[in-house]
Image 1 (cartoon, rainbow, N blue to C red):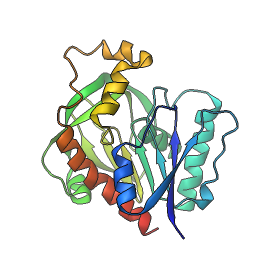
Image 2: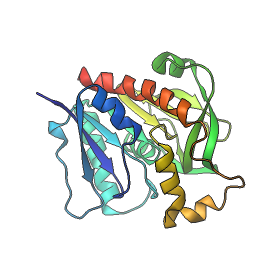
Image 3: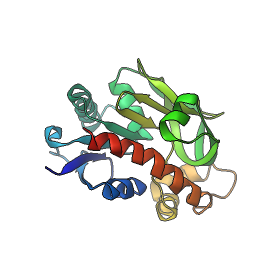
Image 4: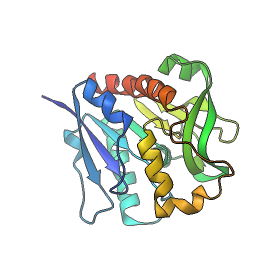
Length: 226
């Protein structure tokens, strides 16, 4: 039987980006579930893993599809599925696991240094600090039993793991084209204007792809063993 992951996304313009490269290289198929569309209710029981993408909204928004998404994540946890969350996805997973999500002291928009903990270096086979792409204004407390994998000076909780569940605050999945699209989106313009220096979509993207292949590859291998 083919291996498949379900992908929860929050707007039609979202894409798996580099995550798709790792999935396809391991023969794992993917299916988007657009929870923001009325009536969308995916059945995760046929999935081997769950990916929760980013988005402009907050994990604390009291709207039906966010509440539904928290329930779906909880169901995936109960089923023991491997889960990967990116940015908002990492915050939603943390909240579904009982942790608090709240405003970070500063917004991180652009390229920022991220440091790996010993656990992160062991998990992802990376050790030196990396300059990674960020676009977020909120952060989270670590869920109970979580291991911190990465941190930055302006946002302590950058990545965590709870068993087969990984949450990444940063965006390893982006390509230069995705970053350029985000910068040009009307909804993002207000936030982008808060940045004091020009964001180059191509800066560090070569290294970002290499790190992403390791991180996403690690998670995909867990899905294949599921």
